[in-house]
Image 1: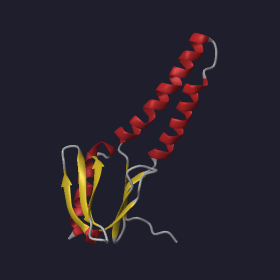
Image 2: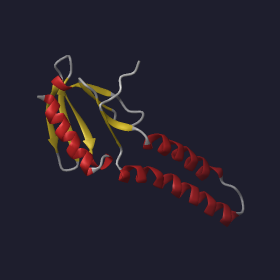
Image 3: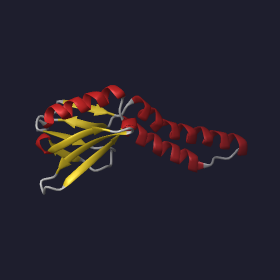
Image 4: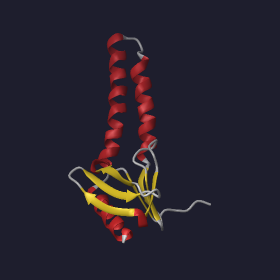
Length: 137
């Protein structure tokens, strides 16, 4: 039985748009090379299709998941998943280009998660800061 998160936040629209730019350029470039040289050059097509699949899979990825007793942070689809209990959160700081969440691990080692603001919408950042500050106390 899987526990459902109370709130989930995925990538912002600008991040999703950026994910699809590279595959589009590669596929258009492959077509242009085919038209110019009258022979199929596979590398741009293969790279374009692979990055398109990665973009499609990543577009549904949830960066932050808020549960009853902890928050789950996974910045990329293949990245490390951090599970941070609300009681271990020390500080939430909003920097110029990133959101920093300071926490302590079970071994009392202090750690920090840096969430790039370009990955999330502005409204989501405000909501995340509000939720984390409310839950840490």
